[in-house]
Structure formats: C-alpha cells, structure tokens
Length: 463
Image (cartoon, rainbow, N blue to C red; front, side, top):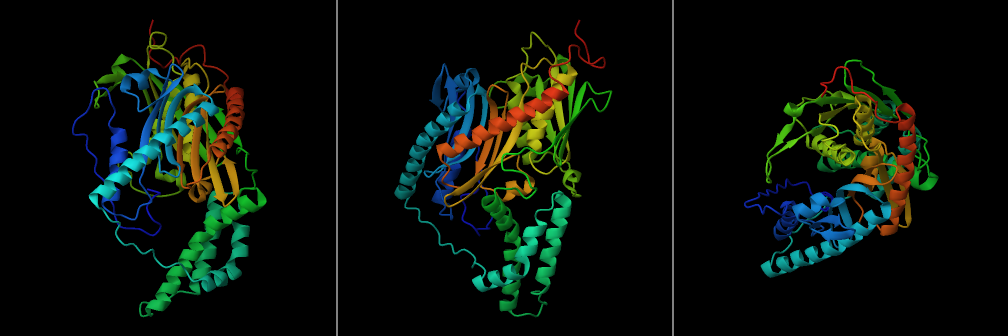
C-alpha cells in the first residue's frame, strides 16, 4: 500500500487464490510477489516492485523460504517484504532471539528480495508493459501556505501539546474550523474559489503531521511532554472481577485493556481446517476493539482485519512460552477487550495476556511484554520513539511492535514508510525497545511475579 503514488485514489483490487497447494510449502509468499507483479504489469503508479520472503532459522542457520517442517521446528518464522531500496514490512515469531540475530535475518532477507524484484522487472520488460500516465493533484500554492501558517501555526503548536487525547483533538478541530471560515464558499462560487477552499483544508489537515514531527525533531520531546525513550505511566489491577478464571486491567497512559484468561477441557479446543491437515487448537487469543474505546459510535459487523492482525501478533508473542500439553492439559482462551485506546493497544494486550494467564494459574515459562516503537526522520535527522501514541503512529515513518521476555524477542511486526531504513537504525530501535520492555516487565513483576500456584476454583480441574 505505501508504494502507490501520493494522490492516487483509484480503487485497486487484487485477487489471489490458491489453485493448488503443495503439502510442504506455504503459498503466501507467492501471493505477495504475484500481487506486485500484477500491479506492475497493469502499469499502475506504483513505486515497486515488491518482493517477499519467509525467513526461518534451524540448527543455528538461517533458511530463506523454509518448508513447513523447517519453519515448525526452527526458532524463527519471519515474513519480510520490501523493494530494492529497503524493507517495508516485517511480521515474525521467534524463540527469544537476540536483537542482533533479527537484524542479521533482515539483511539476508533483503538480498533475496532484490533478486525477486529484478525477476519482476525482467518480466515487465518482456511483456512490454508500460506505466500509465499519472499526474498527481496540484499542491497548494506556497503563498496560501504562508498565509495560513502566519495566522494559525503558533496557536496550533501550542494546542497540540495538550496531554489529554480528546481535549487535544477538540482544540485542534476548533482551530481548523475557525481557519476555514475565512475560505468558505457557497454553491455558486467559481472553480478557483472552490479550489482555494480545498487547498486551505489540505494545508490545515497537514498541520498535525508537520507540528508533531517539528516538536520531535527540533525539541527532542513528544506532544505529551515525554522524552523520546520514555514509557507512559503504567497501572495494573489484578483480578478486577472475582468470577473470571484469570483477569487483569492493564493501563498504559490513555490505553486500557481488560484481559481475561479462561481454562477449558479438551472439548473446548477449536478445529482448524486450513490448507494443511486439520488440527485441534488448544490456545486461543482474541482481541476486540469496540468503537467506544475511541469515543466513536459505529456499527459492529464482524471481526475487522485490524482485530485479526493484532490478535495474531499477541498470540504469536505468548505461544512460545506456553507449557507442554502433558504438563498442563487445559484449553487456554485469552480475550483482550480494549476499553480505551490511544496507541499501542496490541502491546497492552500482550502484557495483559501474560498477567491474566499468571492469574489463572497457567505456568507460562516466562513473562512476555510488548512495546510499540516509532520513527520520525527528515534528511539526516531522525528520532526513535518509545511507546507511541495514536497520533505519533499516524504521522511517523515506522510502526514497529516488539514483544519478548527479558532474554529475547518472541514476536515483532513492522510497517515502514521510508525507503532508507539502515541496519544501524534498526539496531537502535531494537535496543531502545529492549530497554522499554525490561522497564515494563519490572512493572508487571511488581503486580504479579509468577503464575499462581493453584488454578481458579471456578476452572474445570483435572484430578
């Protein structure tokens, strides 16, 4: 998605269907590479091609595009996508790997991605596909930018520092509303006046992006006053409701997750019927993001793509710490309900999942915590942010979620909008994430250091 040209708003739909499935190989990497090739052949305004590989690690050696057997029995399962210029997406599960090993895997993956991109470019050349003409919408005139900035920029910079999310949002909306009144036009206005109003709205819409990044890069501060590497205040309430098998309310800043852990018998497993053989799944983690958690009233029509992705990330981060079935023969279902959200709700779910499982008496091997990192870069300047707010996620150049124990990484997910992400910058972001993770693990340890010795009296019990 980030590779489409700015201003290209035509609807694009890509359909990928597995017509035939090898019992030993996952077709999902073919889907990503095939999608990129299709977009290139269609001549869309696309800064591609995109290549994608799965990285595994078995017996201490990295494997590019491992088969199912190697992926299942190794200590890394990582999907990496990117262009010839750099990496643009990462999603991974790992067995407490170090930050240096993760960076090494990313560097190897990018070398393979370059080969896949070259193959697509060769295909496009042989097919004679030509890019269609695309003209981006005209940028607002510089004079209008200066005019609006002179009147409203100073006040905007002041109000964007309001700490509370909704108060800040209301104050900034008020500035935009007052500013646009000067450019309002009626239905009979000429095209020039209508375009001027449209450009004014665009300039004011960019204010949040520009102001947030300006404060970070010039003052080394955040819009809520925190330092770049500072985690928001954490409050943990164990067992807020007595009837749950295990539960916790985990609050970090203005993000709050109520997480429950429920134990069941073998009859409560979920049947997974995918491309591979059917199996019974005894560990389930679900993430719910109701509209009220962001102060909205929206219809709820099934599970969103976002909820699926965040739930899968949290599940992957916890899974490697589960006890063996022979030691703990229960079906474990963890549910994270987000009660309030201002960024990093998936990472609050990871922390809450550990504590809820501990509260239920699940003997996890170690505690797992998660933190969302961000990046703001312009030219030679860059800043890595710890525990990002929702606004910082929207205006930043990277959303990088890292989960793990005190000894290593168990899961990560990364979306990147810039093309110049270096290995050194990755190491800095991962190092800063580790410091934050250890800080959060300390707070969790103070609330509940280890699994309770007995499971809840309400839970089914194997004798």
